Each structure stands twice: as C-alpha cells, then as structure tokens.
Length: 229
Image 1 (cartoon, rainbow, N blue to C red):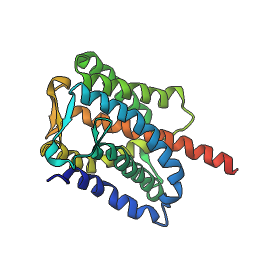
Image 2: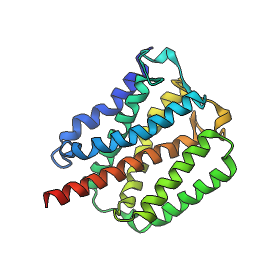
Image 3: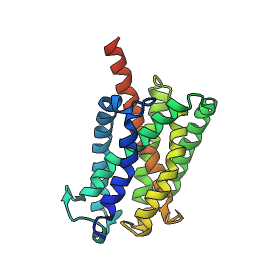
Image 4: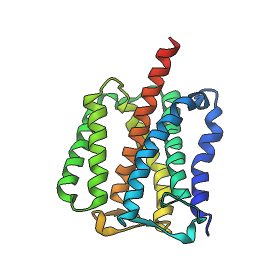
C-alpha cells in the first residue's frame, strides 16, 4: 500500500501530539524549544540521509510510498525526522514530569563511557562499512561533546531513561519499516547483524538522533529561562 510509510509517520506522532496538552507535562508550551532543536538536527540527518541514499547504503521501496520526492528523498523519510524526534522528546518530558526520581543518575557517566567504548570498538572493526563508520563516528563525537566537553547541562541520566523507553516504540516502528520492507538496507555497508529485521546500527542511529535533539532542546530551554529571568 502506497500510504504505508506515511501512515506509520502519522501513527508515531498522533498520541504525542494529542497528549502534548496534558496538564502535568504542558509539552505544547515547550514547542518554541523543541521545534528549533528538531529543525537543526533534521538538517544534519537529512544531509546524512541524502548521502547514504546516493551511496546505496539504503533505499526505499516505492510500493509503500506516495511518490513525492524532495532532495532525492521520499516525503515520508523527511517527515520521519519530525515525527520520531517529537515523539521521543515527548517521552523524555513525560518521564521527567511523572517520574522525577531517577536512579540512573549515579550510573550515567559509566553508561556514557560504555557507549563511547562501544563506538571506538565498532569504528575499529567496522570502519569499512559506511553505515557503521558514520553512525558510530557521529555518536562518538556527539556523546563525547555532551558528556565531557560541554558538561554544563547534566541531563544524561534523564536521556538514558528516555532512550530505553523509546526503544519500545522503536522496535514496533522500525520493525515494520525493515520487515515489510519499506527501507531496504545494503548489508555490504553495515556489519550484517540484525535484531529481528532491524540492523544493529539502527539502535545507535536512534541514540544519536535523540541525543542531539535532547541536547539542543535543553540548550534552548536554558536560554529561554535566562531571558525570562
């Protein structure tokens, strides 16, 4: 069905958008912070996406697309960088509002070091694959910057909790996208290990996408608080 990818996008954002007016979270009041974060991050990932599409790292099945293309990408793929970050940051804010106590705080640095080590290992063993190389290289740079270089915003313990929860819808949505498949991966450009139908790299693609969005979101929130004060 040609509307498959579009319907998946709509399903991803439907409940987060409707529940944005929840009285406790008040996510709609933070749109002025989240949308600039999504826009900036989206530009970076769209450039990445365009490059990977041209390099045949991945491609899109026209049987499940409405046929509108922009910059060489299906419209649905462009919408993906709006719907998924919005939904994930919504999860981040909901968890912070409803569950302010977070036991991950004392483990967040150790988790970051573990993921940084994983990035280095994947770059060492998988440097000959475009997806592995760029994916883990990007995550290494962003994670190191947030955790060690610009450590002003201490939010990683909240980020890791949101990431873990986001993996639940990730397996549903990405499971559909890769099993049908809507998105077709060139296995020569990844390490070839999959969780079900989902490439191993996708888990950390989500992490990098969410981390950049949350970091910028926190930066814009902090600047907004200062301007009010």
